[in-house]
Amino acid sequence: MFEELEPIRLECATCQKCVLGRTRTKSVFSDGAAQGKIMLIGEAPGENEDLQGKPFVGRAGQLLDKILASVGLTRAEHIYICNTIKCRPPDNRVPTWEEKQACRPYLDAQIDILKPRIILLCGKTAVDSFMTTDGGISKIRGQWFDGPHGAKMMPIFHPSYLLRNQSHAPGSPKWLMWQDIREIRRAYDSL
Ligand code: URA
Image (cartoon, rainbow, N blue to C red; front, side):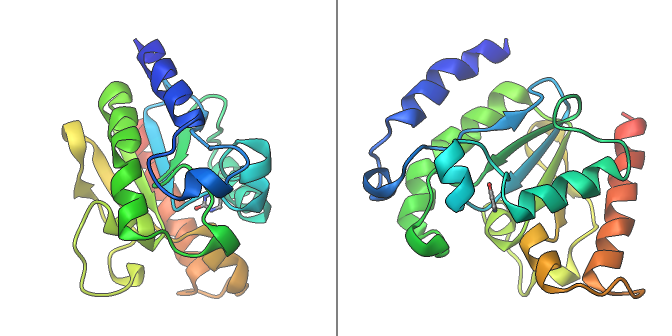
């Protein structure tokens, strides 16, 4: 069933539906376990991702893998990772509305075909693509919302934000992420 995604991945590899098709090295479709029940959606590929064609492989990705591993979750077994848009914006700028619109069918296909039971919206760009909020992610992170196909959907901090906020003190972003990832593990265990 998941092989339905293959033609879509191939289409994405040569996509020219927005201006980012002209400047990317590789489009970045996904990494991880298609059957894994958890989908993590980030913002957009950065420099390392653009070169390797894989999401979250730079410093933020290494931190993400550490956070997941702290509760025994891995790309190999549990998590499918993708981004709101599949090509790197020059200088890692925030994706435009047009770019997000052009790329949305790829993300929707990933969700509709895989039907993850848990969706993690990693950072503001991903959150804004699924819900309307009146502020930053701090107010809603760690809470469960209703997602597509009956998924449980949770906004979480982006690891790049955590890299800029090194404190582990109670109430700090890193400490909150630690609470959130344990709640995610609990939800996964009760599926
Ligand atoms: N940041 C993202 O949001 N996605 C990536 O793939 C890498 C960094």
